[in-house]
Length: 202
Image (cartoon, rainbow, N blue to C red; front, top):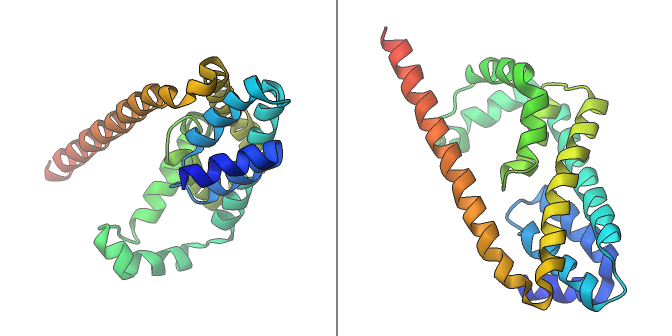
């Protein structure tokens, strides 16, 4: 898949950056780091420039985020409860009664959650769905998504430009960052789970 994406960016430049980043926001397993780093590298060897690459990547991020926000906004408690009552929900051990708690939590931290999560692998895309479900103000959602995406895209595109044709070496730095962030998230989840259990037992 990586080679196909790189060839696509090589052939179609900015438009390919926009399309791939849009798809990545809808389907998180697509590695945005490959698109952004290789796109940044192309600014050294082609007529593409860093600013244009960042603009197209950020536009793709924003349009993709709005798409998922719309999906979340279209959901209601009844339809979400059905999903949680399905095999998927049971395997993940998610209960319908958790919906209200999750919604209250998101509303409390929505602005920080959207802004910070836009710079975290995988969840940077997924955060758009709870934002829509919680009926977060769409203009604030767009603004915070724009800021977070701009930061993320600017760092990776410039990193790709810095490494040039050796951009794949930059993946080592990204992988280290990704493992650190996901590890921190795992520790946080375990901490909250232990805290919840203690509170429940008391």
